[in-house]
Amino acid sequence: MSDESTIRIDWKSCDARGLCAELVPELIKLDEWGYPIVQPGAVPKPLMGHVKRAAAACPTLAVHVIKTPKP
Image (cartoon, rainbow, N blue to C red):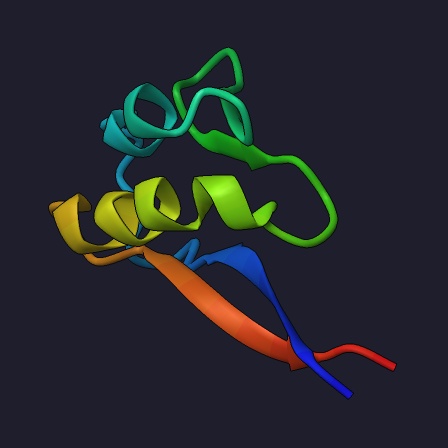
């Protein structure tokens, strides 16, 4: 069994600045109000570094990378 990672948004913390979508446009788009819409599923390994940087750069710390067990 190996681990996969997914992106989670803490909606209570997010204030729709859009930095996450700028850093990972392949996986995060913005809705009409500027809130992130995350592509469902596991983060592809080649994008993991970008996703971690987006989580670290989020001004409200609303972006999280969650490890989930892969069956």
